[in-house]
Image 1 (cartoon, rainbow, N blue to C red):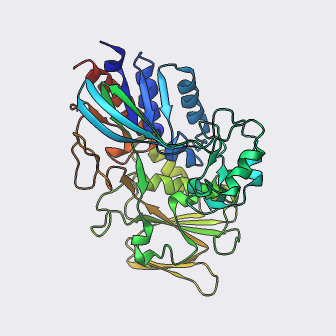
Image 2 (cartoon, rainbow, N blue to C red; image 1 turned 90 degrees about the vertical axis):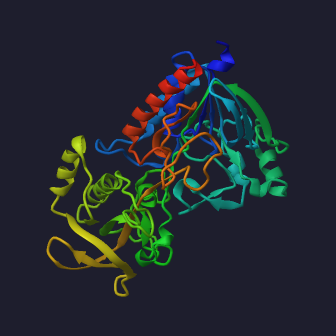
Image 3 (cartoon, rainbow, N blue to C red; image 1 turned 90 degrees about the horizontal axis):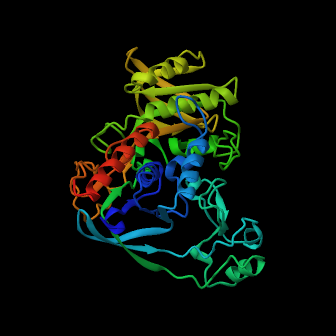
Length: 418
């Protein structure tokens, strides 16, 4: 077979896409990664720690970045999107649009462009909790390790000011979108997931009550490179919190929102309770759950967190969150199912454990893939379009890595006509 027939396209550069890419490339296949963000790493890059070991994700990301950088079989495009895929297994033609970064490979990340830039834009890595300059490095471990100029300033005197500040001619304001065409034998679809929109759950107060945030936002609050430098502060006034209420199944297992269970949210909240307890010794964490999903190897982690006398787990479906007028915090109300009594708890902050929505739920690509009622891909990859990771089902990181390794094997087989 020719090189083009053995080439594999990977759509999505998160942990699933990177895993599929490096596993396929290390068998000798040529791989092209297409990622819409200006960096690889996906949502794992925004995590503070993994459960159950509570280690930072930087080690796992660094290993994958190094494998990509050292493997000549891998080519990747950031700020890119697939415009079309046509053909059949073993013979696909793919059109990829690459949007301009306005920064070239001369970038040394000196930061001079950011120093002279005045316009600020929402920091998407921090879920909009703070802002960054319009000339910015996406995050400290961004790969590629290069600045980006936001489109908002292109064509303005400010953009020229950024270019003039660069000593290495790394800023090219004339960059334009370009289109590339690839011949590939198989496609791995690894476009990941998004958190459910918490503003849809009106009774939990997100968007109206400043001290109600989501689990993904809380993860960034606890991160050393997050909006508060790792300090867990109340959004309304910057006060260091002493109590946090974690509300499980925020919109999940609910026919009005997400009818399914995302599986990993319980473990994420248990992990986040350790952030509170480790950093603030006098603090208290309250976890309100329908059922705790901590299967197999994760049961010990659940037991360890539950043993902390300052962590209270209550079987309850929180019915309402309001602002507490006395403390400026939040008031949670619901029913304690185990005790048959009412819950009425005041805390400094409430964290909503929102479910995982597949990237294929909102916009289903016009490809030979099958979906369930929630937008998860159910096809096996026999068509040559192979799903990987959280587009198939909610998964934690380790499961995504395993699934994407399997996806790489299936994609290799499809390029060989099997």
